[in-house]
Length: 195
Image (tube, rainbow, N blue to C red; front, top):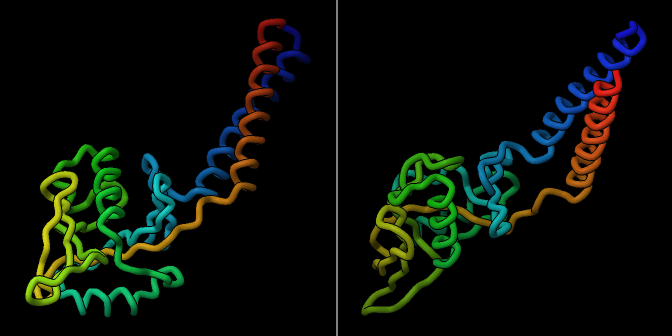
């Protein structure tokens, strides 16, 4: 192979490798750390792509009564605030998604991007049974595990809010980088076979 083609092929190979590294770097900048449908926003918040909800990454580890749960949520300023208690269905979905990603049946503890999940959490659903009660969703006995607790009882607290998906311009930039990378790879292969 002559020197001209050898130099050209080596420059194509280097360009392709550099483009691949840039693509990986841009992906990590735009989406944060991803874990099969969950994205760590890097601010103590995990975004769930399946539900478009933001979740507290490391929820309160000590159990509190229902009034203290609301106090905690209302004072939480993590990543700009806007937090609330989850509904029962939101917690069922979170459990199922964590279980699908990690394979856990008992999804308490450190699971995927979440740190220190407790056995279960207060929800927004309330009832009356001679005194005020609220529902708790369990994370240790499988999907759709819930129980009614008097509001003076204790349970875990995890904060949720409506999330903002990754912006479309970032996705388009990644698509463009991937297409450019594919074109360079095809050109490189073509020149390798001709040489």
